[in-house]
Image 1 (spheres, rainbow, N blue to C red):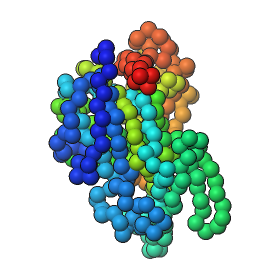
Image 2: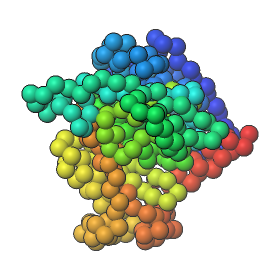
Image 3: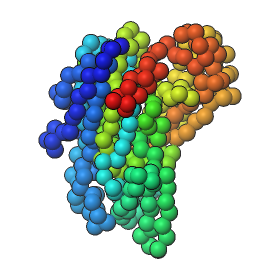
Image 4: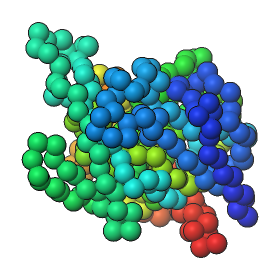
Length: 345
């Protein structure tokens, strides 16, 4: 770990956003331990600004979900793990947009769930964000109803370049991360991503002021973000699927179709993580996880679905680092400290 903060600020110009993981040159090179202050545009590239701005009219597929990055992490090699700690995630605007999109979402016909009935109507909701009170205001389109919900900012898309020379759309979640759309990707969380290529090539985007589990209609409360992350490298420890760590939980994310396979991936990865780091056999870890796991959905609308498995650190035995809740990564607490140092400057 570096002993002093090295802070880099990046606000991409419109032509600097990338739309894939893999296949794009780095926006910048940074070192492990560096702090990144980044602006990310919303999934519509800022084009949906009113109830009249229909996605099919103002956006051009496949140019959705612009990513800030990629960042080349010095020293990152295949077989390492990139740790990304979210120090803060703050909406950059006082408004956000959500929509229905034809042939997209969990409760409508899609290209792969083909039916004879027509798609749902296309509609836009503009949400008002009160950044001081930390609220999101829903206004119904067909009545005078208003509902105020708590703000819970997160990043829907966090990832690295995939393995095997692949280039994946920023709309797709998989083993490299990508568009997982889990509300667990909030400030205070460390995300672990397996490095597949030299430099890792880390990108992020798709800010949500809040999102329900599953992202049922396919679109969250989408807004631009000003986010701060600290990056670190864990040498020689591979990570097969994205993992997350908060002060209270360790978590895994599996992405696939059908949804049962996404569930299985996340559960298996959590079992193997617990077995690896906490001194249990796989069958003992299987039993412990079965009885203690929480299994929130992330998304059931993207190209792949994403399921999360999470277990409280308080339920885990003393880990390889010698204390309850510690993992072999051994960086979450230090990255939290460095995030606090940044915030206290």
